[in-house]
Amino acid sequence: MQLPPSGDPQSYHQVAVAGASGRMGHMLIEAIRDAQDCRLAGALDIPSSPTIGNDAAAFLGHASGVPVSSDFATALEHAQVLIDFTRPEGTLAHLKACRERGVKMVIGTTGFSDAQKQEIADAGRDIAIVMAPNMSVGVNVTMKLLEMAAKALATGYDIEIIEAHHRHKVDAPSGTALKMGEVIAQALGRDLKQCAVYAREGVTGERDPSTIGFSAIRGGDIVGDHTVLFAGTGERIEITHKSASRSTYAQGSLRAVRFLAEQQKGLFDMFDVLGLRT
Image 1 (cartoon, rainbow, N blue to C red):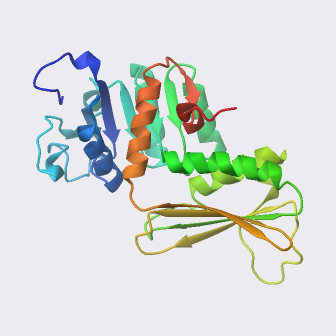
Image 2 (cartoon, rainbow, N blue to C red; image 1 turned 180 degrees about the vertical axis):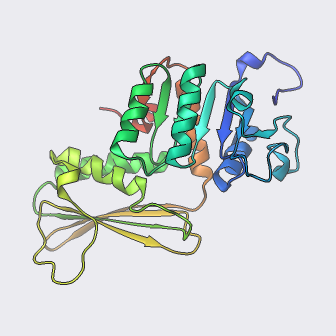
């Protein structure tokens, strides 16, 4: 376990990382290493990962003393919090292990079904969890702006959400785009499941003004762009957030870790972490 040369390890947030060998895993490990109040306590990856057994910070040219492991007990032994940006099935397996061990979680994984989201909510009865489709502070402030805009532009404006991500992203629309839609729908008193439109092709007919449209672009190495268009008669309002680096997700995740230090159990999101809940 990575510790400072001297000092009480209890004064640090002991953080484990799932998907430690991936791009987001590397970004998280680097952010933890750079944080003055956090220490890397565990690193999880799938058994087939070629990095199993290697030092989790080897890619940085440093030794953390934490090997990458596929064994839950080993990776979570010293951890207070697990940060997980993997896949739904993997996250749920990690959730079970954390729940059994009393380890809190920060979940940035997207693509969950309603039943899987309920499973996470159920775990919140025993452990504290922050789950958000996007951990970026800027994105979550954007969500608050969208809530305000939706209430002010409730009539006379058509709403479209356009998102763009890299070619490797496997789910669409993005979890962030869906969350934006949920925030807007809630502000308007609508049910997103009833008003969302995810594809248009052929003769679609006139646009239903009560709908919220989604468009997804996949290509290149786009980290994540989201634009919400409020299109009225004679004017358009666009609220846009663009991510240039995954480091924003890592920094937001560490803010969630610090928030969880004060929570015993419950399911929270980044509005709670950032004090944006009204």
